[in-house]
Image (cartoon, rainbow, N blue to C red; front, side, top):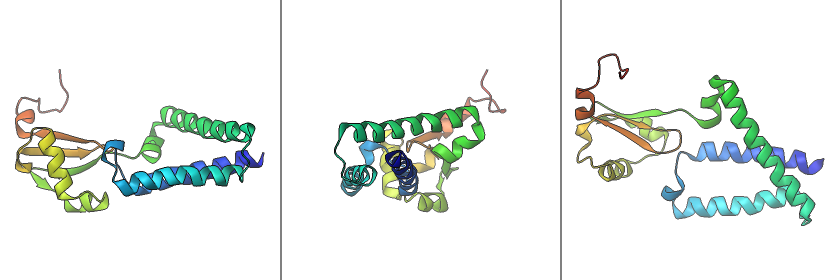
Length: 158
């Protein structure tokens, strides 16, 4: 039973740390962040199993992590209001061609990184962007002025 409690505590600690570190996709992790996550995995294993290298302890620890992941998914599905708590919510980072410094500072997103992502999407200048949203999964959605010209006024597409 002690392993189950330890695994649950470490699961929620790891969840909180990954939420606090920020929104990055695996392909965008810095070398330091990747190293941090790899080392955290080993440290969590040691904290959960107390150096117990038995197969039973490993299976029990992984099972608790898996069940808690399923439970969080079910909670956010069953109670939609918890979705932003569990996964985070999208954040507007560009509006009307202007970068919103408070939003980018809050997410530790540099202008250089934002411009690079825009260029990868075929956007030459941030001034072309009507709206850019940093999604909960770390990806950026760009809506250019030419995208919004043909859209209905209500925001609902037919």
